[in-house]
Length: 293
Image (cartoon, rainbow, N blue to C red; front, side, top):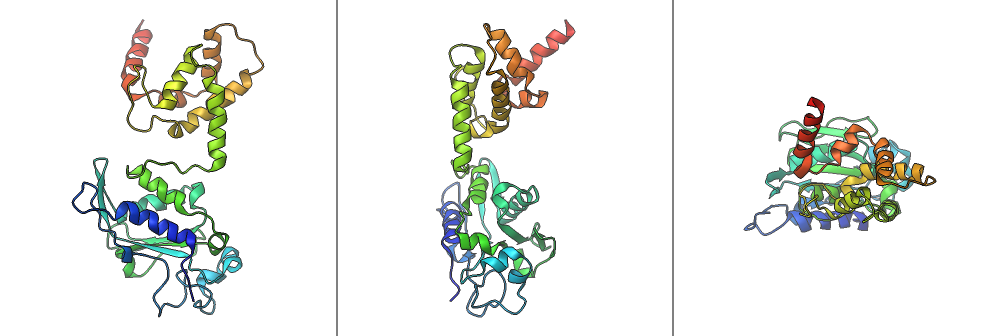
């Protein structure tokens, strides 16, 4: 019989843990267990909610992609998410905004979306749309006004790949999950960068600025809200790491030369993005003063 695979059950559990909560709290939501489905009902035939015992002749969930043909097992390869409403970080989040966020990640080809074949959803509760990685289909039936459908390539389900990172990112983005979705390789990369930069701490401004950045503090030592943290600074860290590699073989004897060398590897956009909001105005005022002078 068609079965629910462990990796999709893990996604289901994650969503229910954070979106099915006490209705008396500020995080009230009404996503119920029966609104997050994986296996189709007994009469369901064909499509990603079915395993090999329920697919039909020329089933689109098998024949349109070699990834599906190679991955066909008794496992279903789809997830339905019903309606919810949750208020977090000063905003209200719903199934529709969740769907639009996920589609945007797929359109951007984010790494944690590449096992997704399609998303069938309604942006407004009336029109039904379908994002299809294969570009074959664009619509869906009216039931998708009330739930959003995710299809996963069957080979990813067969391989048991963790499908939670995308959904963790969503929950983190709306303030319901303080976690990261980085892979072990990404953690290792950040650890290397961290090691290379923290050796400067206490010796010159570059190391001191980095340490505050990594710990989420501004120049006064106070915590900084928002994305001023180690994970959010990946782009800036990349630029810093590249510059440090270029400087590794050079012997600088003063801090000014080090600072000049690091800044030379950063674009104006990188520098602007790396300035905490608490001091951004001070920097702008100082630059204006210098330009006038």
